[in-house]
Each structure stands twice: as structure tokens, then as C-alpha cells.
Image (cartoon, rainbow, N blue to C red; front, side, top):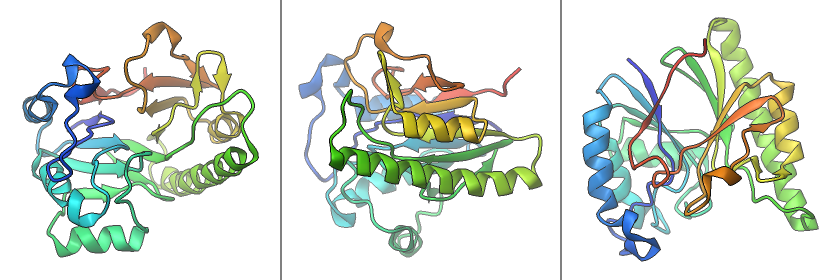
Length: 237
């Protein structure tokens, strides 16, 4: 049994938004995800998807994408991305999956999970800016608060599973180039997070990626950046 991560699936079974307009690497990307996933992930494994799963605007237009993910091997834990307009309250999300038999799909939203020997926490995060506006600052602080709620849940699980490492999954990068999202980095350090995974970035120069936010090591797991193949997360040495 193992834990994997893959962000930014950008599925569009019903929304009709082809991704190859963003470059040749996106051609037939749904088939790439399907083949790579099924050849990599076993039914007993778990995969975290940190946002931008579907282009659907509501449950109706995202249903086929969620059903596609449900049918893939393993248990899935989905976080919110900036394009996940179909996202609702936790009550509505869980009700929708229950009503439609999507029992391999779970959501990361102000909560935490113990899976495969790890404790999984996270939130969406927000865009980086050298001088964020008042509106952006408000959202950043809200997201930092949501991350804290998730990590509080994770800390409770840590008491039950003291050997488990707490991992954080964001959609937006907490740092990029010379910019760091201070409130998010502070929460990561407050809870002793050592590894953080995120997506959102596409067509970027890998040398611009920041290696750390606070004391947390950063990993960009956008689907196109890692070859549309879920990345296995191994236990730290």
C-alpha cells in the first residue's frame, strides 16, 4: 500500500474545454492520466489530488469527471483549486458523492486524514504577490486559518498515530522564486511540517521553483510537470 499525489488533472468530460491549447504536452492528457494512473496505483493505494480536478462549473457538469476519478484505482482525497467552481460546502460535497455512489472520493476541507502511514492536511492557499492587495491579504489570512484547522485535526490524529508524518497539500505554491506567503509558511512551521506538495503552476522554468517555505520542503506536482503520472510519496529517512 502506498500514497501518491497528482495535481491539476483539468478534466473536461462535459465542459468541453480542450487542454491542448496550452501546449503539445497536454494532447490526449486524459488518456495519459488514465494509463499512467492504472499502471502505477493499486486498488489499495491512496492518491491526493490538490486541486483543479474539473473544469465543470457545478455538480452537473463535473459529475463525469468525478465519476472518472472514482473509477480509477485507489482511494482519492481531493483538495480545492482555483478552477474548481463546482466545489461546495463539505456537507454538499459528501452528500453528492454518497448519492452517486462515488465512494472512493473524499475531500480535504478543514479536516485531515490518516492514510498509508501519513497524516494528510491542506487547503487551497492563494496567489503570491510582492505587495498583496487588501482583498488578497484577507483571502491569504482566511486560507492560513483553514490550514490551521486542518493541521489541528492532523495534530489530533498524530496522538493516535505518533509515528505518522504530517504532510500538507496546497493548490497554490506557498513560495515561488523569491516570494514566500508568510502566513502560510508560519502555519507550516508552527505545526512542524517538513514536506508540502502543491500544483497550479504550468509551463514554468523549474529553476524558478522555491525549495522551501519556512522549514517545509516544497514539491510541485502539477500533472504536466510530472508527466501526468501520480508521484509516490515515500516515508522520510
